[in-house]
Length: 326
Image (cartoon, rainbow, N blue to C red; front, side, top):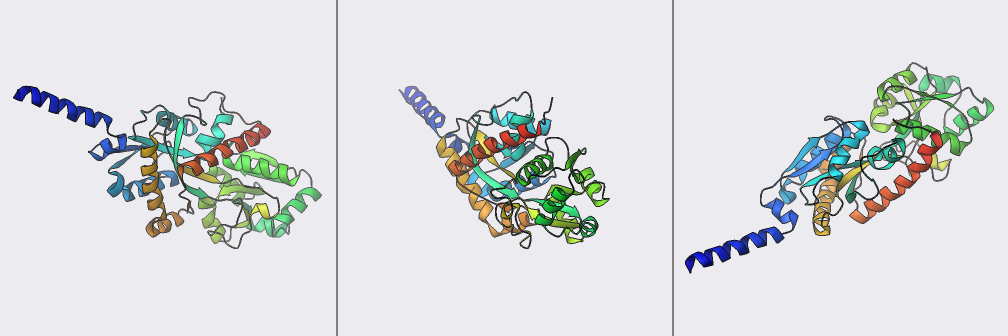
């Protein structure tokens, strides 16, 4: 009788554990793996590690797993194909979830259906910058001056970017279309060579992310004409947005947290609450400000709607440029 009761008790315990929400199982000692689809040390990796540290009391241990490659597609695909048990989450970014689906001929995952949004982490404004000496020589002090010069001197301006299909390339093409101007695109092998080309006046202007451009803006080597956020950025409060001149213009760098599609909503909501609280902490805002990153922290539904709109927006932008990979 005793043996039978023991077996029944064991079976009930096993059943109870099996039916626990995945998040509850994680709290029993199983760490969460957060896949970052980019190399260690970059802004996305740094912000992910900062948040992982801040949520350990509410979510338990969060281990960062860097899986770079294929423009972020390798790591994103690992998230998409992971078990939806709340133990694997990852980073969704502008490239992986808005640009790459239109840039790559073949994608290993479906950006629209393979992920469950948790929260947007940050946005990083892009900024239209000119070489300060060149701007002075051409008498360009603001965005309206740049557009007027381009219209009065067709074919004389060019701009650099980190490569075909890069954020800088897409922003430049979107700007040309909306402003009704022409400027020759000169792709470089990465953002740093493109910035060096601007500093040496090999190109006339660039769209760069604020984190990269800020030191040269502060030193006076680059002149910031406009930011690409719809409203002014607190990081550059004196610089107007492109949208002040070209209504609705918005093309920012962003990233956030997602889980595999099918992850229980209860788990998603609990994670979202923990990460949003971490994003709103004063220490987080101070740390992210050093990276020129603005914390967002929204609901899963809001982040999902945002990613859907970004995917649709970049379909038009990428197809207009004709940029393709493989």
